[in-house]
Length: 243
Image 1 (cartoon, helix red, strand yellow):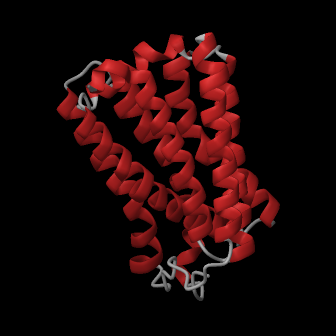
Image 2 (cartoon, rainbow, N blue to C red):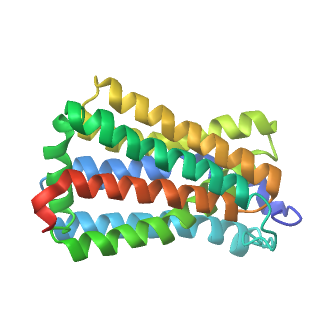
Protein backbone atom coordinates (compact mmCIF):
# COMPACT_ATOMS: atom_id res chain seq x y z
CA UNK A 1 0.00 0.00 0.00
CA UNK A 2 1.05 3.62 -0.39
CA UNK A 3 0.82 4.57 3.26
CA UNK A 4 -1.55 6.89 5.12
CA UNK A 5 -3.19 9.48 2.83
CA UNK A 6 -2.14 13.08 3.42
CA UNK A 7 -4.01 16.35 3.00
CA UNK A 8 -2.35 16.79 -0.37
CA UNK A 9 -3.82 13.54 -1.64
CA UNK A 10 -7.11 15.36 -2.15
CA UNK A 11 -5.52 16.44 -5.40
CA UNK A 12 -5.25 12.80 -6.48
CA UNK A 13 -8.10 12.94 -9.05
CA UNK A 14 -6.39 15.74 -10.95
CA UNK A 15 -2.95 14.14 -10.81
CA UNK A 16 -4.39 10.77 -11.81
CA UNK A 17 -6.15 12.39 -14.75
CA UNK A 18 -2.85 13.88 -15.88
CA UNK A 19 -1.04 10.57 -15.31
CA UNK A 20 -3.56 8.68 -17.44
CA UNK A 21 -3.23 10.94 -20.49
CA UNK A 22 0.42 12.02 -20.19
CA UNK A 23 1.91 8.91 -21.90
CA UNK A 24 -0.57 9.35 -24.76
CA UNK A 25 0.48 12.98 -25.25
CA UNK A 26 4.20 12.17 -25.03
CA UNK A 27 3.87 9.37 -27.57
CA UNK A 28 1.85 11.55 -29.95
CA UNK A 29 4.45 14.34 -29.78
CA UNK A 30 7.61 12.35 -30.44
CA UNK A 31 6.03 9.62 -32.59
CA UNK A 32 3.59 11.63 -34.72
CA UNK A 33 4.18 15.37 -34.40
CA UNK A 34 7.95 15.11 -34.76
CA UNK A 35 7.84 12.31 -37.32
CA UNK A 36 10.32 13.03 -40.11
CA UNK A 37 12.19 15.50 -37.94
CA UNK A 38 15.78 15.22 -36.81
CA UNK A 39 16.31 11.87 -35.03
CA UNK A 40 18.18 13.57 -32.17
CA UNK A 41 15.16 15.81 -31.53
CA UNK A 42 12.79 12.85 -31.48
CA UNK A 43 15.04 10.90 -29.12
CA UNK A 44 15.51 13.93 -26.88
CA UNK A 45 11.79 14.62 -26.60
CA UNK A 46 11.09 10.93 -25.95
CA UNK A 47 13.72 10.78 -23.18
CA UNK A 48 12.58 13.99 -21.51
CA UNK A 49 8.91 13.01 -21.77
CA UNK A 50 9.45 9.49 -20.43
CA UNK A 51 11.61 10.85 -17.60
CA UNK A 52 8.86 13.29 -16.61
CA UNK A 53 6.26 10.52 -16.79
CA UNK A 54 8.14 8.12 -14.55
CA UNK A 55 9.17 10.87 -12.13
CA UNK A 56 5.56 11.98 -11.60
CA UNK A 57 4.56 9.23 -9.11
CA UNK A 58 7.67 9.74 -6.98
CA UNK A 59 7.26 13.50 -6.91
CA UNK A 60 3.56 13.36 -6.12
CA UNK A 61 3.48 10.49 -3.65
CA UNK A 62 6.86 10.84 -1.99
CA UNK A 63 7.67 14.55 -2.09
CA UNK A 64 4.29 16.29 -2.12
CA UNK A 65 1.95 13.89 -0.34
CA UNK A 66 4.85 12.60 1.81
CA UNK A 67 3.53 9.06 1.76
CA UNK A 68 5.63 5.93 1.90
CA UNK A 69 6.52 4.86 -1.62
CA UNK A 70 6.79 1.14 -0.91
CA UNK A 71 6.31 0.03 -4.51
CA UNK A 72 9.02 -2.61 -4.27
CA UNK A 73 7.16 -5.30 -2.38
CA UNK A 74 8.86 -7.80 -0.11
CA UNK A 75 6.65 -10.66 -1.28
CA UNK A 76 7.08 -12.86 -4.34
CA UNK A 77 3.40 -13.77 -4.43
CA UNK A 78 1.98 -13.73 -7.91
CA UNK A 79 5.26 -14.59 -9.64
CA UNK A 80 4.07 -18.02 -10.80
CA UNK A 81 0.83 -16.57 -12.18
CA UNK A 82 2.69 -13.77 -13.91
CA UNK A 83 5.25 -16.13 -15.38
CA UNK A 84 2.55 -18.52 -16.58
CA UNK A 85 0.52 -15.78 -18.27
CA UNK A 86 3.63 -14.22 -19.81
CA UNK A 87 4.87 -17.57 -21.09
CA UNK A 88 1.46 -18.40 -22.59
CA UNK A 89 1.33 -15.08 -24.46
CA UNK A 90 5.00 -15.42 -25.46
CA UNK A 91 4.42 -18.84 -27.05
CA UNK A 92 1.17 -17.69 -28.68
CA UNK A 93 2.88 -14.68 -30.25
CA UNK A 94 5.85 -16.66 -31.58
CA UNK A 95 3.64 -19.44 -32.98
CA UNK A 96 1.24 -16.92 -34.54
CA UNK A 97 4.16 -15.09 -36.15
CA UNK A 98 5.77 -18.24 -37.54
CA UNK A 99 2.64 -19.99 -38.76
CA UNK A 100 0.14 -17.22 -39.54
CA UNK A 101 1.48 -13.67 -39.74
CA UNK A 102 4.81 -14.20 -41.50
CA UNK A 103 3.73 -16.86 -44.06
CA UNK A 104 0.62 -14.91 -45.01
CA UNK A 105 2.29 -11.50 -45.02
CA UNK A 106 -0.19 -10.16 -42.47
CA UNK A 107 2.29 -7.64 -41.11
CA UNK A 108 3.92 -6.69 -44.41
CA UNK A 109 2.01 -3.41 -44.58
CA UNK A 110 3.52 -2.34 -41.26
CA UNK A 111 7.10 -3.40 -41.95
CA UNK A 112 8.21 -0.30 -43.88
CA UNK A 113 6.71 2.03 -41.28
CA UNK A 114 8.37 0.11 -38.45
CA UNK A 115 11.73 0.21 -40.25
CA UNK A 116 11.41 3.97 -40.75
CA UNK A 117 10.55 4.60 -37.10
CA UNK A 118 13.44 2.44 -35.92
CA UNK A 119 15.83 4.41 -38.13
CA UNK A 120 14.40 7.72 -36.87
CA UNK A 121 15.11 6.59 -33.33
CA UNK A 122 18.72 5.88 -34.28
CA UNK A 123 18.53 2.09 -34.08
CA UNK A 124 20.08 0.76 -37.29
CA UNK A 125 22.39 -2.02 -36.10
CA UNK A 126 22.14 -5.31 -34.26
CA UNK A 127 23.99 -3.92 -31.24
CA UNK A 128 21.73 -0.88 -31.05
CA UNK A 129 18.63 -3.05 -31.34
CA UNK A 130 19.95 -5.43 -28.69
CA UNK A 131 20.64 -2.57 -26.27
CA UNK A 132 17.18 -1.12 -26.90
CA UNK A 133 15.58 -4.54 -26.44
CA UNK A 134 17.38 -5.26 -23.17
CA UNK A 135 16.44 -1.84 -21.82
CA UNK A 136 12.77 -2.17 -22.75
CA UNK A 137 12.42 -5.76 -21.59
CA UNK A 138 14.20 -5.38 -18.25
CA UNK A 139 13.90 -1.73 -17.25
CA UNK A 140 11.07 -0.12 -19.17
CA UNK A 141 8.67 -2.97 -18.41
CA UNK A 142 9.33 -2.52 -14.68
CA UNK A 143 8.88 1.24 -14.92
CA UNK A 144 5.57 0.76 -16.70
CA UNK A 145 4.36 -1.63 -14.01
CA UNK A 146 5.37 0.82 -11.30
CA UNK A 147 3.61 3.63 -13.16
CA UNK A 148 0.44 1.91 -14.34
CA UNK A 149 -0.19 -0.73 -11.69
CA UNK A 150 1.35 0.69 -8.51
CA UNK A 151 0.53 4.35 -9.11
CA UNK A 152 -2.42 4.72 -11.50
CA UNK A 153 -4.34 1.57 -10.60
CA UNK A 154 -3.19 1.62 -6.98
CA UNK A 155 -4.53 5.11 -6.37
CA UNK A 156 -7.62 4.78 -8.57
CA UNK A 157 -8.87 1.97 -6.33
CA UNK A 158 -9.02 4.47 -3.47
CA UNK A 159 -11.87 6.26 -5.22
CA UNK A 160 -13.66 3.68 -7.35
CA UNK A 161 -14.39 -0.05 -7.00
CA UNK A 162 -11.49 -2.33 -7.92
CA UNK A 163 -13.22 -3.51 -11.10
CA UNK A 164 -13.57 0.04 -12.36
CA UNK A 165 -9.98 0.81 -11.38
CA UNK A 166 -8.81 -2.19 -13.42
CA UNK A 167 -10.92 -1.14 -16.41
CA UNK A 168 -9.93 2.53 -16.39
CA UNK A 169 -6.24 1.93 -15.82
CA UNK A 170 -6.03 -0.75 -18.51
CA UNK A 171 -7.76 1.47 -21.09
CA UNK A 172 -5.41 4.34 -20.26
CA UNK A 173 -2.47 1.94 -20.47
CA UNK A 174 -3.56 0.83 -23.94
CA UNK A 175 -4.19 4.37 -25.23
CA UNK A 176 -0.62 5.30 -26.10
CA UNK A 177 -0.16 1.89 -27.71
CA UNK A 178 -3.04 2.80 -30.03
CA UNK A 179 -0.91 5.68 -31.36
CA UNK A 180 1.96 3.30 -32.08
CA UNK A 181 -0.16 0.57 -33.64
CA UNK A 182 -2.31 2.81 -35.83
CA UNK A 183 0.85 4.50 -37.09
CA UNK A 184 2.23 1.14 -38.11
CA UNK A 185 -0.95 -0.47 -39.45
CA UNK A 186 -3.31 2.43 -40.19
CA UNK A 187 -6.41 3.64 -38.36
CA UNK A 188 -8.71 1.30 -40.24
CA UNK A 189 -6.62 -1.83 -39.84
CA UNK A 190 -8.34 -4.52 -37.76
CA UNK A 191 -4.90 -5.64 -36.59
CA UNK A 192 -4.17 -2.28 -35.00
CA UNK A 193 -7.33 -2.49 -32.92
CA UNK A 194 -7.00 -6.20 -32.18
CA UNK A 195 -3.50 -5.68 -30.82
CA UNK A 196 -4.67 -2.60 -28.88
CA UNK A 197 -7.39 -4.65 -27.21
CA UNK A 198 -4.79 -7.30 -26.42
CA UNK A 199 -2.67 -4.64 -24.69
CA UNK A 200 -5.68 -3.56 -22.62
CA UNK A 201 -6.40 -7.18 -21.67
CA UNK A 202 -2.79 -7.60 -20.59
CA UNK A 203 -2.98 -4.43 -18.52
CA UNK A 204 -6.19 -5.63 -16.88
CA UNK A 205 -4.61 -8.98 -16.00
CA UNK A 206 -1.56 -7.29 -14.50
CA UNK A 207 -3.73 -4.95 -12.44
CA UNK A 208 -5.78 -7.91 -11.21
CA UNK A 209 -2.60 -9.83 -10.37
CA UNK A 210 -1.19 -6.84 -8.52
CA UNK A 211 -4.44 -6.47 -6.58
CA UNK A 212 -4.38 -10.15 -5.68
CA UNK A 213 -0.69 -10.47 -4.80
CA UNK A 214 0.28 -7.00 -3.58
CA UNK A 215 3.51 -7.32 -5.56
CA UNK A 216 4.82 -5.97 -8.87
CA UNK A 217 7.15 -8.90 -9.43
CA UNK A 218 4.51 -11.08 -11.10
CA UNK A 219 3.23 -8.38 -13.48
CA UNK A 220 6.81 -7.33 -14.25
CA UNK A 221 7.98 -10.84 -15.18
CA UNK A 222 4.86 -11.31 -17.30
CA UNK A 223 5.36 -7.96 -19.02
CA UNK A 224 9.05 -8.75 -19.56
CA UNK A 225 8.34 -12.04 -21.34
CA UNK A 226 5.83 -10.41 -23.70
CA UNK A 227 8.27 -7.62 -24.53
CA UNK A 228 10.91 -10.26 -25.34
CA UNK A 229 8.49 -11.82 -27.82
CA UNK A 230 7.83 -8.42 -29.39
CA UNK A 231 11.52 -7.72 -29.87
CA UNK A 232 12.19 -11.21 -31.27
CA UNK A 233 9.42 -10.75 -33.83
CA UNK A 234 10.64 -7.23 -34.53
CA UNK A 235 14.11 -8.57 -35.25
CA UNK A 236 12.66 -10.98 -37.79
CA UNK A 237 10.68 -8.18 -39.42
CA UNK A 238 13.56 -5.73 -39.68
CA UNK A 239 15.83 -8.22 -41.44
CA UNK A 240 18.95 -6.81 -43.11
CA UNK A 241 18.54 -3.38 -41.44
CA UNK A 242 20.15 -4.80 -38.31
CA UNK A 243 22.83 -6.94 -39.98
